[in-house]
Image (cartoon, rainbow, N blue to C red):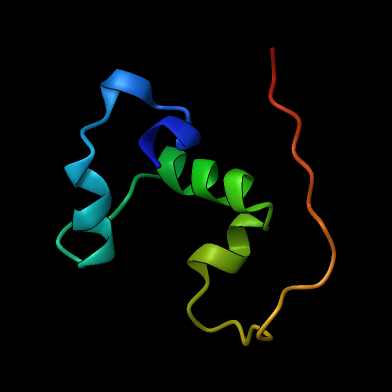
Length: 66
């Protein structure tokens, strides 16, 4: 997952478990990487009040800046 998020060696793999178990909150950069990887809007990840359907409609395609 760390590799797919694009963080390589700068990010410890245990950090993902800490996010999933609510021991640590991800930074905005990490949340943005998750959103891009999942092809969803960042708002869908961070807005707890939003009522999401079981399956999100559409495909969000992000292009990585060069």
